[in-house]
Length: 77
Image (tube, rainbow, N blue to C red):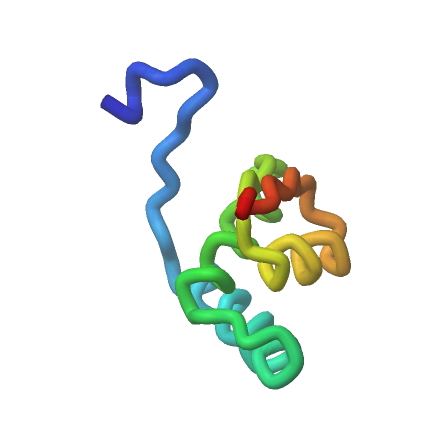
């Protein structure tokens, strides 16, 4: 199903992705409480010049700090 979406690319993670995600977690986790999955998301988006669409303000803030294209969708109450 994902492959049928326009401009969708499957990214195979490698050692560099793991190192970069670990560096993001090390640098930002204490202030932003990012999960390791969040860090991989930011890493892969940056490597592929992709946009992140998120409802998570921590992902939004770190992505912006790292100059990753991000759209934030606030949850309605």
